[in-house]
Length: 50
Image 1: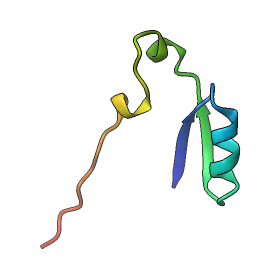
Image 2: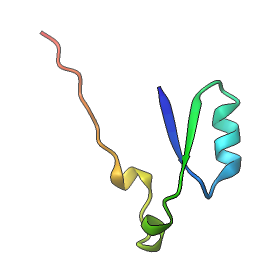
Image 3: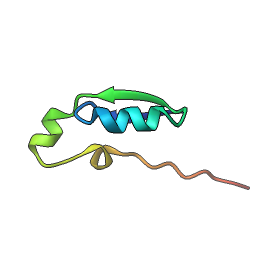
Image 4: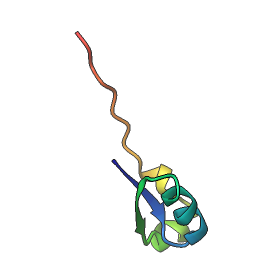
């Protein structure tokens, strides 16, 4: 999978990338103006079994 990281945090992007994750930087400056972050825009999926 791919991990999305705010483009404003290059050190975080580097550290996560060093763990062999695919990292995609995303400009979230408009969300930051509203004091929001990527988790505010997250969708959580639950797997269904049976």
